[in-house]
Structure formats: structure tokens, C-alpha cells
Length: 164
Image 1 (spheres, one colour):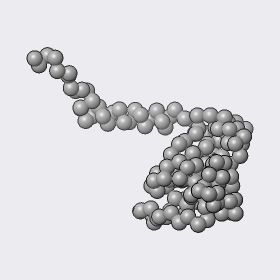
Image 2 (cartoon, rainbow, N blue to C red):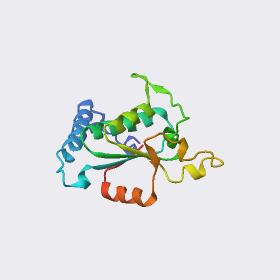
Image 3 (cartoon, rainbow, N blue to C red):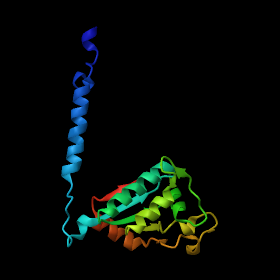
Image 4 (tube, rainbow, N blue to C red):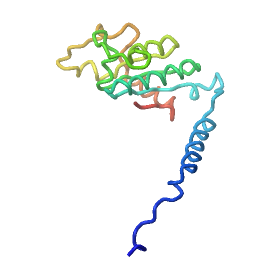
């Protein structure tokens, strides 16, 4: 009867093999992407970060990614959709995140200070509950995405579209 039971994954259960696997995955991420992009090759520099999560720490992580990429001179565009679009509103006060006690909005504004751009999804304002929000309700440097512009940015960014 024992011979019909599935075998345990003895290779994966070995702690050393798990570490080796993790190192190989990190190495492929580190060396599999170009770090010194040529200045005239726009496709390597464009990164679009699409944020749809309503979870505060997920939004914060998205903005930390945007900061890191913008500091490395990538052309970063943050697209806020769904419930994450509230980050672009003046009246919304997101909670502060530990350990630095800054909000996802403050992190987004820091990314924008490094050159990132941010916009809300073009369907957010007209579908915001009785159309209660207008472009006047957006933060100063946040605009409404244009469908054609978003499509073009996504095509240029290619595989460099990060979703949160």
C-alpha cells in the first residue's frame, strides 16, 4: 500500500536546495535585465506602473518601485486605476505606512520629484459615484490618462509594465 503514495519532494525539502533555487532566481533577475540602457533606446527606459490595489502597503510598494526606477533615470509613468485612483485626489488622506510613517501618496510625490509622472485612469472621474470628482479634485501634478497615450506608453514599455 505504501508504494501507491506519492513520493515527497525530497529535493525541494532540502533547505540548501531552496536557498540555491532562490539565489538562482535572484541572479536571473539581476543579470537578465539590462541595467545600462542606451540613452537613445527609449524602449529600455520606459516603465509603466499600473496600480489597482486598494491595499495601502501594496500601493506603498508600487511607489517605492517607482522611486527606485525614477532615481535610476527611467521614464516612469504611474497609472492609478480602480480604488487606487483615490491616491490622485486632493481630499483623500491615505494612512501612513510603517516604518517611515509616510503614506503611499507621499511616496508617489517623491517619485514624481525624481521625474515620474502620474495619472488616474480615464474612466475613474466619469464613474466616481455620481460623477462627484472632476479634474479640479486631482492633485496638481496628477492628470487624467488619455486612452491613446496609455496604449502608446504600454506598447513602448513592452515587458516593462509592472502591476500592483
